[in-house]
Length: 165
Image: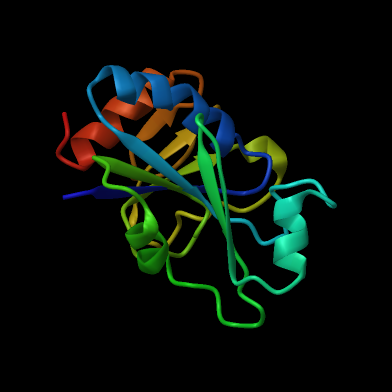
């Protein structure tokens, strides 16, 4: 059974950097980990003019680019609604843990990466799905506060939260 755990926070808070630092630690603990990153922006995986981009622009619903090193599938929604987080998870290969960056309001256990210096309000207040706050400052909250500059502590918290410690 795949465990799912979210990392949420405002733009610029350090979510991606934290996940990047935790991935080798979780792997060293024997976990196969996948990541889903949600973006509110359009993005391109291939340079314009490459064969795969040309196929997509010509109307292909999905284009797979495959090599001896990796493969990627680009699926065009073409006006269809964005698939749910559960639908996205179902598309992934089996893993022990899926870390989800973004999906701020998904009903999954998650932590917030919060930096008061950004001057933006926290997300965790009033949301019971948040289990802890990862921060670089002292906070007045009932949730556990984990040190942002210690990814091993955060990784261990996540492993315990999903029963993989």
